[in-house]
Picture 1 (cartoon, rainbow, N blue to C red):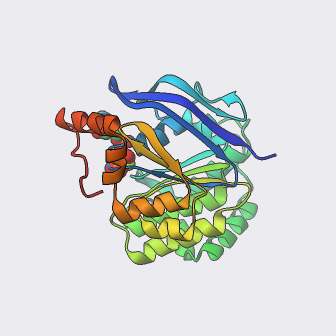
Picture 2 (cartoon, rainbow, N blue to C red):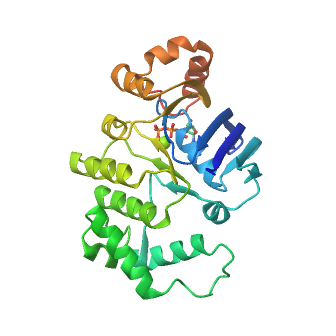
Length: 276
Ligand SMILES: Nc1ncnc2c1ncn2[C@@H]1O[C@H](COP(=O)(O)OP(=O)(O)OP(=O)(O)O)[C@@H](O)[C@H]1O
Ligand SMILES: [Mg+2]
């Protein structure tokens, strides 16, 4: 049976400031969802809150998988339950090679009851699997010997994320994409990799401003955030429409949320992106 990730009335604050104001979301394994909304609307906040980042305080609501609450779980425990977040701004870990990192991550996710220091998955088995995943994705073998994110270009960071996704095969993958900095080859790589990896055992929640990614991986569900609330939902057509026309129409249709967005901007936050 396929698993369901459920978010109910999620309210999240950062440094005492309420950012998400009652978000509902239901994602089933195997589905592709697009999470959209202008800059500062709360997309990354939702992603981090799902993963359990300590800075994001859950002030109300519930996150669950198949009815089991994740609210009290640490990020690593959530990862073992099948949630994966590709960070918009991945960290650099010099001294740790890509292959070593992946071997640890894969071991932890596959053996949820393993204690720190206990055996990793056998090297030969791991190497063989890594090699075949890298070949499938067209990632050159030297990549596995590089230090994690150290000196990685934007495109290489994406490769790393996708490789993690391919090795971990989470039930629920959240991809928080930067909207700039990737050249068209990198965008194509990510698009093709996602469509190759998508399948009945994985749900993908795509946060992106790239039309291309969603053209290639048509979402069954699109959710639009404005000022920390989901104001509209639709299918792939809605995502397409927003790419085409920007968020002016959304703001007009939801004047209260638009006013909150404006108030937050006036209070010294980020500027609302008029262009989006
Ligand atoms: N670490 C933080 N400290 C304080 N405020 C934050 C922090 N992270 C996010 N915020 C605020 O929360 C709101 C939502 O930001 P968030 O990053 O979730 O937006 P987003 O939809 O991902 O935007 P973008 O499209 O630019 O990535 C913004 O007002 C932002 O300033
Ligand atoms: Mg963001």
